[in-house]
Amino acid sequence: MVDAAAAGFIAAGIAPLDRIAATGPNGPDLVIAFLACMRIGAIWVGMNAALAPPEKSALLRASQARLLLADAATIAGVAALGSAPATVVMNADGGPDAWSDLLRTHNGAPRQTIAIDPWAPAIIAYTSGTTGEPKGVVHSQHNFITVCANAIDRGQRGLSGRRAAGLPMTIPNVMLRGPLLSLYTGGTYVCVDAAHAHGIADWIDREKIESIAIVATVLHDLLFDPTVDPNQLRTLAYPIIGGGSLPERLQEAYQERFGKNVQFTYGLTEAPTVVTETDPDVPIRRGASGKPLPHIDLAILDEAGSPLPAGGEGEICLRAVRAGPWAGVYTPALGYWMQPEKSAALCHDGWMHTGDIGSLDGDGNLFVLDRRGDLIVRGGGNVYPADVERVLVALDAVTTAAVIGVPDDRLGERVAAVVELAPGVPATAATIINLRDACTEELAKYKVPSDWFVVDEMPRNPMRKIVKPRLAAMIQEGVLRSIAVPKSVRAGEGSQKEGGR
Image (tube, rainbow, N blue to C red; front, side, top):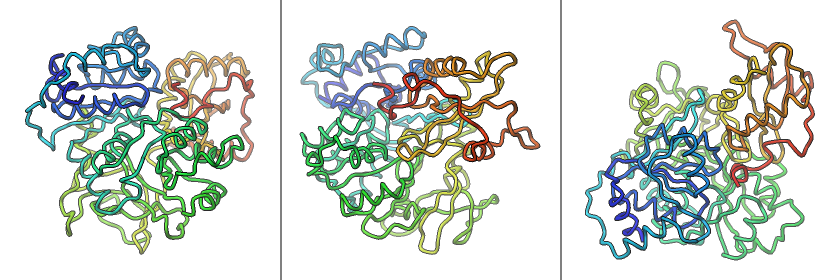
C-alpha cells in the first residue's frame, strides 16, 4: 500500500522536497501516506485536525504545500479561504474516496528507486512562535530514525508490545514516537481515534493495549471517573504521560494503580521530541525532568554561551554527545522553514538553543524553570498566548489583551484572557460572549479562553511591556474577578483533540 501511495504521489506530480500536507482523524491511512512521502523524498507537513480553517490555511500557505490529504469538510473550509492546493479526499470512515481510488489505481506498483538523502528536509512540524505566526521546524529522516534507534538502545519500556497514543498522529512527534517507533521495533501500533477517557478505555479493552501515551487530563479521568470500568485497563502496564506537570494527588493515584512513579520528560519539537526523562523505578525528585538521553549532550549556558556549573540558571542547550557509541550521531532541527533569521538563532556556536531556562543538579537532573516564552500547557495541548492575543486585539471592542495560564487541577492550566476594552464597551457577559465567539471562529477550541477578566489599565514595566506575572498574581489574589459567562456557552472545555471533533 505504501508503494501504491508513492506511485500515486508521483503520478500527481509530486517531486522530492515538494510538501505534502495531511490532516484528519487517526488511522492507518495516515501512516501509509507518511511512509510513502518519505519513500519518494517529499516533505511531510502534519496539521492537527483540531485547528480551525484559518489556522490550517496559514500552514498551507507557509509551507507552500503542493498536495493536501484531508476530509471533504476540511478541504472545503480551506478552499473557501483561497488556500487549498491540489487535494485528495481522505475519509476516516472507510467509504469510497479519492484516497482509496488512488491506492486501487496504483495497486501492485513497484517500490520507487528514488535516492533518498537522509539528512535532507523530510518533515515540517509547525509550532506557533511567540509572535503568533506559524513556525515550521524542519527535520530530516536521520533525525527521526535516531530517536527510534536510541529508544531500542536504552531499552525503552513496552516497545515490542501493543502500543498506542491518545494524541493526533498528524503531529509529527506523535507519528515518530507512535507508528514509526512501533514499525522500527517490530511492535504493534493501534491507531486510537479517541480523546476522552471513556473512548480510550474502550480502545484499551478491545485491543489489549499495553502502553499508551496520553495527556494528564485523560489519566485523571481514567483514574478518578467513577463511570470508567477499571477492568477495561487490565492490560495497560505502561501509561506514558506528557504535556505538563501533575498534581500530587494524581501522582499518588498513578503509583497506586500501576506500581510505578510517573515518568516525567522534557522535550520540544526542535529536538525532536523527548530530550530528558525520569526513571519510573526510582523515587521522583520533585521538580526534575530527568536526565538527558544517551545521544544528547545537554548544558546550561549563560548569556555569553559558557556552560554553568550545577545549580546555575541559564538557557537549556543541546548538541550531540562527544564520546561513546552515540558520539556525533544526534542532529537537531535543520532550522525553521523559510525563516533564515530564526534558524540562525536556533542553532549556532555548536549548540541548539531552546530558549527555555533551566538548571542541572549535581547528578545531572534537569530542572525546567521557565517554559519557552509564555507557553500555556492546557490538558496536554500547547497554547501560545500570542495566537489568542492576535485574534483579540484585532477586534474593535478590545484595546489590548494579555493571555496567561491559570492553574487547574484537571487540565494543568486553563487559558485566561485579560482585556482592556475600548471606550464605551461595557464589561458584561454579552461582551465576553462576543469576544469568545470571535476566538472560536479563528482558533481551535482548546485555545479559546475559558476565563475572562477586564482591567482598566494593564500593569506595565518601564519599557511599556505588559507584566504578565503581575496579572497572574492579581488573579490568584482575587484582585481581578472573572466575568461570569453561562456555562453552556463557555469555550475551551474540551481537550486538544476534543476541540476539533
